[in-house]
Length: 476
Image 1 (cartoon, rainbow, N blue to C red):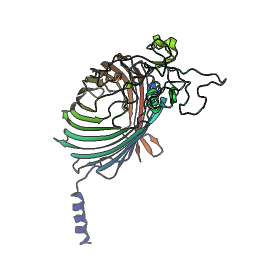
Image 2 (cartoon, rainbow, N blue to C red; image 1 turned 90 degrees about the vertical axis):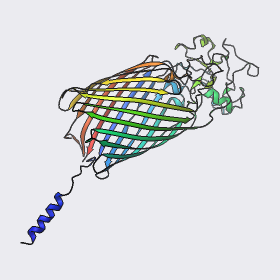
Image 3 (tube, rainbow, N blue to C red; image 1 turned 60 degrees about the vertical axis):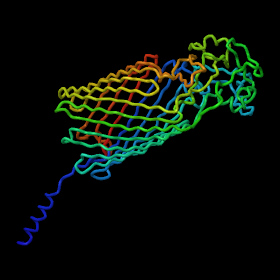
Image 4 (spheres, one colour; image 1 turned 180 degrees about the vertical axis):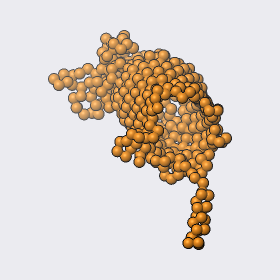
């Protein structure tokens, strides 16, 4: 009994000398995220800068964060992005056409056996395979925190694929906290190795597959019209042909980025952060699906001759102009975004969150982005957050609208994402947060739920609506 007392006391001394270390993540967390996006506009890049941009997209995503031990977290982020697109469908805009493979499959006849004229329009969605696609993506991330939680190392691997593109990526970073965790400095690096599985406009790829003979393949039995609506002599000297005889110089696209960030807590009510990114891209940076038309070349069409004068109007439903070439851009691009965030806690109810970014690249684009979000706490668990975002950019050196490029141009695109534009986005969201995760669904405790709607509009006429939702669970 006498001996047991000091032994018990010694054990207590050793236990209390240990330093308590809080786990970085107490339990596994699961995020279910989704968004529904719709847009419409009149500047489709696939049809050379005019035509329907109608598109719908849904993106269900699952993010799982798993604590491996006190210090390490594994995160798995995977999902799909499924879309239908009037613009992409017009990779092959022609209806009533046979396969062009030499088989008599009667695709160019209706149920009565009558010949159906081949037509197409940049304003009408085609029923071809390219009208829809599913992008699949997955990212695996790992992070390790030091014992004092002042250093965080991270790494990630990513993969995504769709029918004409595949991407592999890897990255890593380190974050250091100082000044009693009031100051944070971060450095991250990423590389992406991507490859096109190129799809080309039907008339261009069919021309090369037919041995550049307008009497073979797809063009066999198809009338080609000049600008006056007259049927051309395919064996004559004045015929349609692509401007260039090469497709892609390379199928690769590589991207390298380095990011620096600095964050500082200013007193009890404010925090600001700044970031600088350096991005270098190389390889085939254009999109082989996107057509370009030249002002100094003759125009040729397939379809209804009567609608040629109305070609650039949505009233044109049955004639399509044959492409001069695909989009061609430089094989390198250097980008530099610089931005800052500032958050100010006004009181227990209202917070201000501001954001600004300046962007420049060596393609001639300069842009400014500014946004404001105002979370307002309306109860212990509910917060609403109206938001506004403004964006403006200059045009790339290589952009010109439909039919305004010249054959003397070395690079050319009619993609309005590279045009001069302004845009505005208005949003309103509501968030539910359960700090003590009292709500349950089986073994999952609800941590927070978010729902947001945004309306987006460009000076080019493009308009879009976005509904996004998310729910986070903590696994017991």
